[in-house]
Image (cartoon, rainbow, N blue to C red):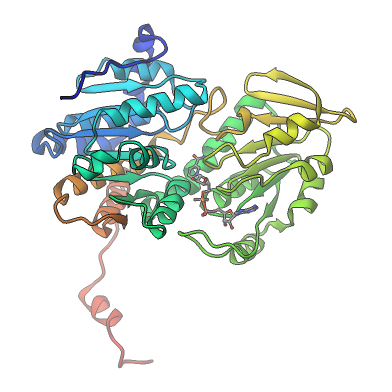
Length: 436
Ligand code: NAI
């Protein structure tokens, strides 16, 4: 028998503000609104518990309410120690059938304590962002898998999916996990346009600096990187792209092809050391470790700004920055100034955590973008619930019909109607005998 676990948030009295924020998000999330209406009737999650490990802010709150409308008991924690919006967490904790374990500025211990609470809730489905919860249930709560209580999950981001593939390769993945990140209507939109706008947003709003004329170095020309590069270019920045050779991520082309794509998209492509010397603003979006490190910091110009949009706070080597610094201060909230021994100053944003999400600079993706991504999460969770008896352990694609249904819903919400192919065109596209 599961003991009742009570929510733990920073300030329950902040709920009033959180409720308003959630209402604002809801107004701009027509897909989740439609899905919630359908879930209220069909109750696909009746009797099920869903544990969610996502950045806990207003758009996530709308997803959580949508799943609860479908009959689920939802337990939620954040997938990052500093991306929780405390007002929203407080508001969510007041919802029926929802328990929340999240607050901003968590220590590592607090962060993992919160994950433990949502694992202890004995979830039937998990929704993860970055693989921390998936790893935890496999390591410490594997009885949930053995006893067939936990029957599957969904993963939101590139880094998480990469880790799932590694688990699968080593035979360590014991449940079906849907790679929501890899749906076209996710990575082509959310990773590219969502990360782009919110990263630009965080840097401009947080620092109040002019972008035009500055040299912005984007490290990693994946879906996130190419979006970030295009938006900074549109603002008048000179964009430099840095890629690597000899690497191909699970959802993408090899680094060499990406470097060439960047070149033909009109950017300067440099290696790390060349870029370090010319950049004013550096943004990592690689999913990799120590992309910017000591040798690069030493080459950078005085006043260089360092930000990360990749999932974990490992892309910029913070330890090396601390070692190089003779003084560390915080001239603005979310901005750390490292004064090096030669008096050169480097500025690290949001402690090297995802700049577009981590407090106080990040607000997360635009609401409409998350409406699409979370529609995928909601429909993929329903798919898991409906097909639990037949799905095998491993990394699964989002079913094509869900991906296209979400794309259609987004078009509809923008009042765009596409023509269908004519019968003649359909026939022609399957033709192989007719030439000119
Ligand atoms: P991706 O796999 O499409 O692109 C990553 C690129 O980085 C690849 O082209 C790879 O060749 C390159 N790369 C790897 N190591 C490098 C290095 N040392 N130097 C330069 N380039 C390097 O991945 P995607 O979808 O663009 O995601 C990137 C990261 O952003 C992941 O950690 C992902 O989880 C995260 N993400 C963050 C979001 C946010 O809101 N901040 C939203 C979506 C994803």
